[in-house]
Length: 416
Picture 1 (cartoon, rainbow, N blue to C red):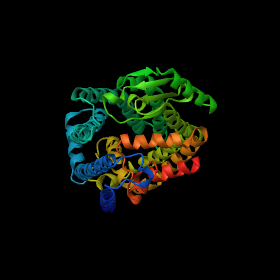
Picture 2 (picture 1 turned 45 degrees about the vertical axis):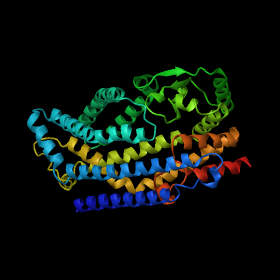
Picture 3 (picture 1 turned 90 degrees about the vertical axis):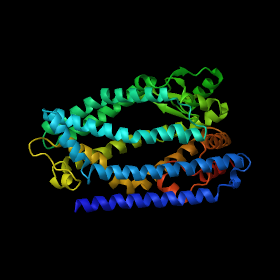
Picture 4 (picture 1 turned 60 degrees about the horizontal axis):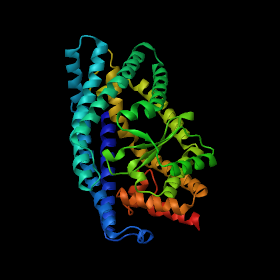
């Protein structure tokens, strides 16, 4: 029965994604040659067509990735791939604990290798075709190597501790496991600004004193404490521009991509940051963290129950070991199939995120001139080749940010 449910949910998800991709393709292609009237005075037809072509190319790529990933999932589960890897790990490792660590490592390595061609194509073909890629193969290899080191240094202790808890902490191991997960994530968030991020990018203090004073004045006006303004060399990887807040408590800092600073005027940068400050003012970050930790608690509880059910393993093409622990198998299967069953909740999460974006926009329009945020957003849409004409259904299902016309429309109403 569980096998049938899994197959039904997988097929329903794939069909829904393909249907949404078809809608998006047709809608964007239909409006490819016509700039929406709201943007006609700011974005040219060439830029609009480029954004449409970029969107269509990404959809085609995503469809191929979807079909491939679905085939890999079926291969690992119902067709016996994970079972074969489990038997191989048992033949190689004499220790039961080492066997489980080895199994997780083998699956992670396999998935990374299978995803590698898609990552390379996305970066060096798709992004290059539209002028966004600035990464070299050498930098790509360096990033990959650092990623592996981080996975081992951070992931291996976490996995080992979790497997130990599953074996030794009794019936309610999942509660201890959840606590471990929360502590791990908080530690990563604390370490990210000063330890992890500098491994991949160079961060230098913002040199433009006039812009720095403008930003500090905004922060003081909104009661926001800052621990630094930094510029990141994002241009060595991509032409896309961005800015973000990072850190917790009093260690919050603002990071600008150098590509963003080169494109936006000071008053536009101030407006973008006012939007980000809106997220903090409305406690969006805290709400999302609390929600994420609450959901993860439910998932850990569910995993704790499923790990004890034989049908969970056999229904997904795996025979649990009778002479050893099956904790690693439970973790892997849960990780593989959870997205299949949570996919229907995607539009709810998207709606919740868009609600937060509207609230942050409204806050920014109260702290700065809405016209500055409008002009900044239009430039970012243009520079990042974001389509101005998404399919409404596709957008409602997936988009974490409101469609451009609706977002700009509300800001213009606030400015009038």
